[in-house]
Length: 328
Image (cartoon, rainbow, N blue to C red):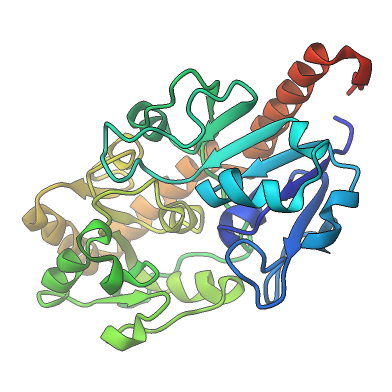
């Protein structure tokens, strides 16, 4: 399709790196001090050169085709502060990364019943659980854009968790499970503020997977989350997964095939111990995980899905306002 001019805020760096593999002209607003959403490309970004920063006060002068919001603040505040009245009438997508809060089934989405918005969820579980009202919804499964040369070795007889600020996030992120299980076998954590609890600290995204690949398995202790990108990244490099069997994960990981999933901590412990004691089996499951990741979460499919949604929302907007119709 023809290249579009798209405005998007920097909310989730890993996801932003993946979605910008779709070859359009992407614009990231920036503000002094880099408040939430306004840090631009970020430090040592691996995003393509066609992803450009623009001062927030200059956004109103852009010839845009599409707006992508990702947070209530983007949707309710940011777009009204930095977009012109004309830009606020442009096709708009709300990309929802998260499971519903504060209630898992009764939380109404901020964009519910907004016919001018297309709401894109990253898992079927999320779309099912959010109260979306009458807003049109789509699901685009995750993907990741990481160094394709990174390969699992599993040389460290230790598991690893990759969660930012796991202690602050508490039970939802599974901090208590991590603490319980690391008392019984070798298990560490990477991510923001992980060094404070005996982990290996924060590692820049461009180097993270080289480090993770050396551990025997990735453990996802999250009780309530979208399908974690750390899981997709680990699968992509050929790493076996041990995970709490909640939200979307039971539809992805099969026991004994890609790793182990369970809601029973004793079963999680047994799966971890098996992988620590059987490196050949760990590699077999990691190979299966890599094949699954390529099939279900590969970048070509992800880019095609996003381009299809872009074409759909542009076409719908043109049919509503045919005077401004553009052929794509």
